[in-house]
Image (cartoon, rainbow, N blue to C red; front, side, top):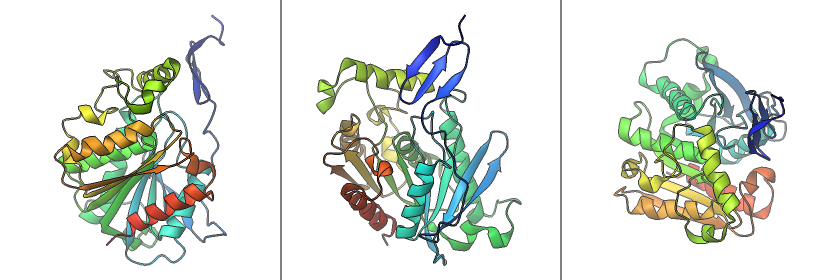
Length: 319
């Protein structure tokens, strides 16, 4: 058998070969934590688990003082590419932390297909329990107290989750888990979903005009990262099918969609089904005209990205 025989081709993201080799075409570059000269934002990496391998990149703003809102961020990449240490997410978190004046925890979860879903959810929940342990009295060892940025600077009663694409999917499900299981020591105020990666077996809205190949790509991608899934109507992928939707553990959600993103309809629809779910919070959906999927990560300074960031900063600083 040739080692070039493809098993899956999800270009431009990832390829899987029949000999078991995985080739990531995007999202493999990394940068170390730093003190960013332009903003003064400091970052550092902390390993929270060896088995499984889970770490976080922490950020504090230049003017860090007690007690700042606490943002937990989940990166995108279809559950199979990118990382918390990629230049894309490092630059984005530096910018957001500086402007919003928040403490941020960017989660490094294991990637599919080597670690199929639900590994990403399990790792993200483990990271959240680690964050909460700084406030609930269960924390054991680790950082020295003077380097414990979470305890020193974060307000346990003003926690937010955010993510883009697959990371937005994770942020949503972590919000559900907080609502159903609880997370002692912290209070989740709101969730930010940027171009969330949701799907379903039935086309809605502009999806009806999408090429069949695009729809199949979306469905096949989900099966690739979660081989045991029931398909596109799995509650992990289609919130409408989730009986727990009304248990979302926060009072406010903001969803960002982009006009030219194939996932746009899912973001709008999420707002609709969430309002009808029995959840008694407030959800707002905002659409960026003329933009594609996760456009803001490609150019943080474009007009629509600046407007989006301004909205997120306001959301994170609500009283």
